[in-house]
Length: 234
Ligand code: CTP
Ligand code: MG
Image 1 (cartoon, protein in one colour):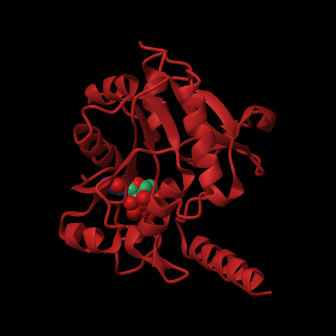
Image 2 (cartoon, rainbow, N blue to C red; image 1 turned 90 degrees about the vertical axis):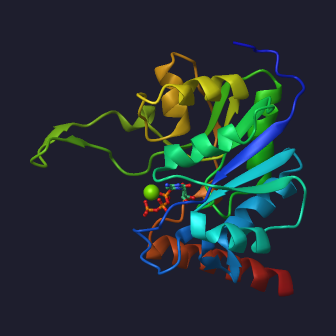
């Protein structure tokens, strides 16, 4: 695998084609507003503000392609494509739309408040030669494994656990290889890359890169933006 990724374009893939079942709004989640702006727009604005991304490909539900084009910044470097049934399908659609990328970021629209500075740090690691890099935060809860009956089967040492965020960064050929084998299954993009035996580097994540999944998360995200606006006025 090529490890001298010192030039070449950085393409951000933004999965925004989910239904948002756990949020429970009538609109697919990425199109739900936070502080008056749809999450997918906030996520794309964050990627642009990082100054570290050359192109952005946003994967959305079929019926929302036109709405997405209308609400995203009118720029040649932002493109909308149709996503798929599962998140992995959506990422695969994005990869196919960027055959010349040298590096990929995969960044959930649902992590709408991710600081641009975190995005820039992931790209800096890629440019310094990392093949796979993910933001990670210490886990605050104790995590237990359970069996099908809900009985505890173990308690891994929390000190060795991390909660993983996006953007996740990859050498483009590595992510292509991970997605080429449709039998591989994982709950995040780095998980697929790990199955290929590649080392994944962690960098410190940021609490503001939290994923908006539930009503409580949406309340929190709105409160954060309200708070930021109030601070801006004083
Ligand atoms: N996503 C996607 N295509 C899918 C499923 C998910 O592009 N088929 C995107 C979502 O839009 C989101 C990100 O992947 O930005 C993370 O997924 P998640 O938080 O699970 O969002 P949803 O799948 O929309 O939510 P839920 O699982 O509650 O339905
Ligand atoms: Mg989902």
